[in-house]
Length: 401
Image (cartoon, rainbow, N blue to C red; front, side, top):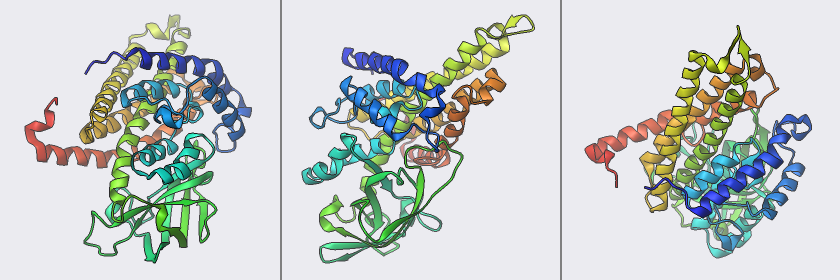
């Protein structure tokens, strides 16, 4: 592949960078920007979203016909990396999880009627959304074959019973995509799930709690949900009965990669803060930047970030070619998650007490970074995927095509 961005992609990259520098970075230093969950206040977010729309920097992953930019995955990689130079960026440009992945899968598999009702309001920024899959033990997490939440059919209606947890964005979401078991046969692990759509105002379900965690939280946090006969019309079923696993696979592959795109932006930001500090800070008469040990630390992280960028771009290019890019996405997910943690840890070490304090966003990024090795499949799961693929493909695992 050619790693040169085409003129349109490069223009968007530069415009996003300029918008972030002018409108978003200054907000990070103002305590009034943050809500009780250490994210930007929703009212301020929505005001900045209006500015992003006016600047033509809205919903990069969506087609122009829906009000988006229609960028390819490669173009999105450049856009998202610049967007997450600020901790608020993805949310402002409407390319933050979980809405990002939900919009993507609905655009790919929903009917036109479903897109008008369930997708377009998310694209327009009128509602937030949530993807409801993960369950407490002994239910399904990384292994969807263990999902126990069940949907029972009664004529043209489905009734849902069960429990979900760590559901991202649920506290503020209005549109939900739910994965439930529709075949009780435990031996069926491929066509046992079905995807459904439901609205926050539906009856017979509740948010049990917003789960406290290391934070900082995305908008809507991570929540535990309980379903006690939630009724969903069959018209709000997504794809066919038994296609729930397919829906999750279609959604999660690109969503894992867009996480990596954003994490690279945060990794570069951490490096930027570290480089600015060591360039001016002196110790025992020597600039930190002139110390070999400091140079080795920064050089190692710079190397890892660039490796991550190449892995992400390769996977994005393969997705643009119509390939599922399973091993490329898993490789990127493992490496970039580790790199984000390493980058911010190194930046905190070089900034000393300043980095550990709230005088910079490094401590915010550090706490956020720990979840990167867990979300959308723990690193160990992705390593198992790579091992299985290598066992199946042998030397073909390394093919360039």
